[in-house]
Length: 260
Image: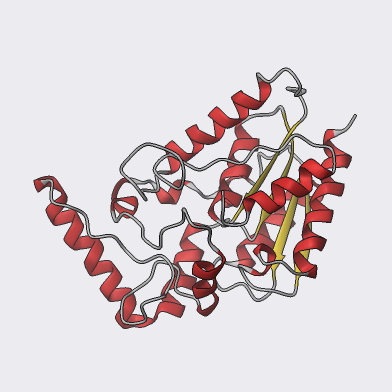
């Protein structure tokens, strides 16, 4: 939550909306373990628990819920809207739409040596996890240049500087072994979507595949409103004019879709 989400939540609250931010289990201020472990099914469960909490609140109209997600969560919110027809609108910022293409983007920017080192670290964990050995965490952002990083693009090092005090630059390797990361794949849902979506894209993004986002928007037709920003994957988390523009665009979108 403390890595950019509070600012967006405050902007939505200032516009008159109820805003809820949360940490996934095993991350930040939330309890649960293993720590720093991404599981797509578990994270979707956490989202559904947050939505249920909002709908049960006395001051919230249960039929006027909108979702906001960035990067990996940008894929989650599309999946949630697909499975929950009562969601009224989705804002997905620099979102992962196709995990296969995003993996190719990562391998390209990571380079052969570091991509091979990352794969070897995952294979090593696969061989030792059955013996209950302690997992060797993977580096998320490329802060230590001699070690492979999950986010390999040049701008990913900015994440460590933007992140709040609860954020850790490490990822549990079991995320790649049993976290079912491939299920965060909104590109498979284009023919079944019925929820209005605002897709905010960083034109210089080198973390996710923008081509996947553009194709998704084309296939969703009028359901998907797409805006391009002159920035990279983390520009809209920084305190700048583009972030303020993205916030205002999201507010206007929610006003149009959530307010009767």
